[in-house]
Image 1: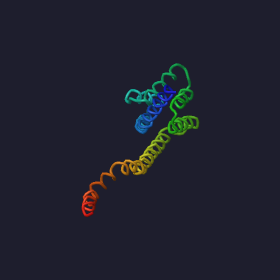
Image 2 (image 1 turned 60 degrees about the vertical axis):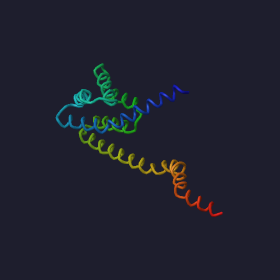
Image 3 (image 1 turned 180 degrees about the vertical axis):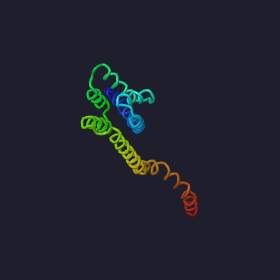
Image 4 (image 1 turned 90 degrees about the vertical axis):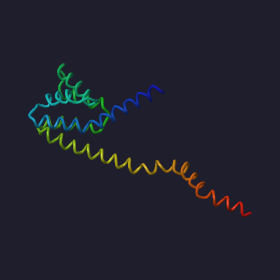
Length: 162
């Protein structure tokens, strides 16, 4: 039971790191493609310039391509290893663009904007949940001490009167 919990926490932390890195990775890929590099060369540039979970995954992807797997198989492997909806959508969009011959730059730019919007929405959600999470400590710790400070002298005067 505990090993499974530990592994699940590691997976969750790794996925969170990958999600945090995603906008920068998309921007670097977009700039590389705009500069005229091919997709594999852009991934190579990304791997050499960026560090992190996504860089490691794309490095593994490039190695698989060099060993003979197709780009589709290698990218599908990345999609399966990282259990993030954003990554799954990104790779599906990349594969679809490759299949249909659509410009990769447009796909990556749209994806980058979507990821940034989703990050902003998650931050707003967490900000909305913060007051609810703070309510219990406020009621349990701060309000009683505040009542003692404010009502303590009045209570002492009231008891002295009787």
